[in-house]
Image 1 (cartoon, helix red, strand yellow):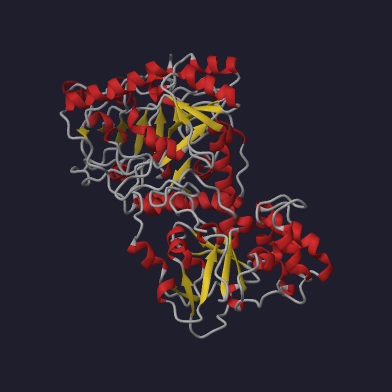
Image 2 (tube, helix red, strand yellow; image 1 turned 30 degrees about the vertical axis):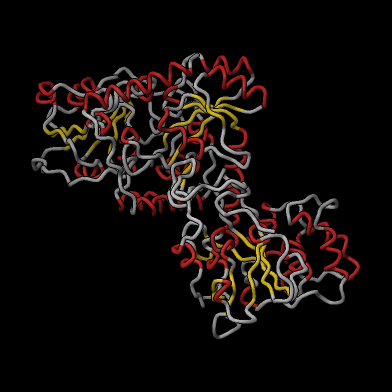
Length: 628
């Protein structure tokens, strides 16, 4: 019985050669030498803390379907020499993952059985990567790897072995570990057979491949208990001892604690996506990407142009509706409340991409907020609640401090645009004031609070605060690209600005500035990360917590926060990030690593006036239909 192709994750339909997946990523070909070469590499490095049991890696035959489905298989098996099945020497053990290779392995040859077991990673539409695999050796291929792991001689990890009369209890554990229901699961028969056989049904594989005592320690057991709360502690300890874990992004071995923490995040993200059954307010060029970002094991949400159709569809299915926050019609929240349908507002994250959205650079970071939009101070968003009420542990703050240092050292910003360093030097002895413009018709400015609402008014207000400062004006890149409103007349710039930093990335400008003035621009937050004095004329999410000088204070924000608490909430806990390589949700640190290799797209080659009209028409059309 042939298993599903790895790119379909259970679907019988596979993309044709040269086609693309639904999110625009090229579909993998039927034979990908690069993927197979990555899998079939030698690795003689045992897991951290373990000692190899053999001097040379053991040969392990890998079917092509398994190599394609688990391209990071070598990370799970660093002490085996992986070779293609057709090139394997006689007598080599065969790796077999039933979910991919088929339910019936060949008889008569030694097997290394693999199973996700209780560490099953969720599917995000077409996207999936294994995080943990249970390993068990079998001489004849008749046994379930989870049953063998639970029955194996691992008393040093579990504290005791299962006796011959405990087959039924072990069968329930096997069923639960394989994703069934304890006491009434398809794993009971396998568990009974494995438990009541004389001794054990199979010899243990080399000790170096069984995991380490450290991975079966208290911290790992606590993480495993969260991943599989239905299993008893003894079963968890045995499964941990027989499991291998790998980083799906870096394709290298990792600890059980790290893998299970990522598994918990994936399961939470998939559950949140599953609740979103419809979407509206999405521009055409965002549709495929947004469906991929919001996909769950049930598939992507259905997209509607009309907001009323999305509400009816969600109400009939008991789900929620995702809406692009900037395009959300004013009356949609009231209509959704009347229909009993929760709304989830979606916006770009604070480290978005390499390149501009108006030039079709895909957003690799999003925020999904069921309470409100983070840029709208009219009501508290989930981010504001995190900042006002969140409990930030020492470990989280230490992570935030490391992230902050990394962002500053690498010059990472929201758009990460390429460009040359600023071609000017401020006069010696004068304070440098960086004033950051915004898109004047953007929702973050229209709903961002404060009385200063145009870039020209911002320049005028900033100049009044310090007439002697050397004022550097940085236009918003969308405005510079000719796609959005907000250009300041040249004669006004000549009067109010000492220098206009056009066509340069913003990160080098922070190093020159003594202070940064914004309305509600994210540039103020980026300047805070770099230790700059920030003046806010609006009410952005980072204002009002004691870190900025607020010209339009928001009375309800009374808590005083440290910078790392702000970073923890705004960059770690609140947004979601997607790995541009695997297409899966990833930690912010992984995304920052990927940014180093990413390049901004060239964008559409259209005249500036036409580009501006297309952008306005697309946004206006989308918002008009969402209001219907």
